[in-house]
Image: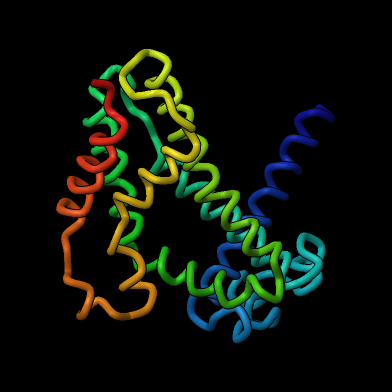
Length: 209
């Protein structure tokens, strides 16, 4: 019975933490990091200020936890190798499509702007974003590429560097125009055009002859 009670309490604690993070997300996305106050977050989360501080000692640590949660959840959904037995080109195409959808997501752009604005003063926020999202995704893609190098599908190279280059190629021209609100002068290349061009260029250098 004691074990059941502990498990129920842990679950309740987890739900309360997520409630706070969800309320904080509303405030940060609507008001920005500097604009959102702990009082705003308390109201949005529907909890007491004491409860918020019991979980997070500061607004910075709350934002850091939110960034890590949301970016890791997103990365786990986007960077998925559904069937590694498929031709490399098709696996890369599936990855490129999901990455393209990610870069065209308005919430992704909003988070990027928030993190860039806060990271200089609070570097832990920047690290949380990078480790939970980009670094996690690169590691997963690098692991796949290493296996394809080992079986002769790709030429031998630094798998992590290859993964980073692939990600850059398939998002080239997609994210920066949106990040800087300059889509009207970006050329308006579609996700598919960018993805196919990036995959072709990547495989030109990496596909085994």
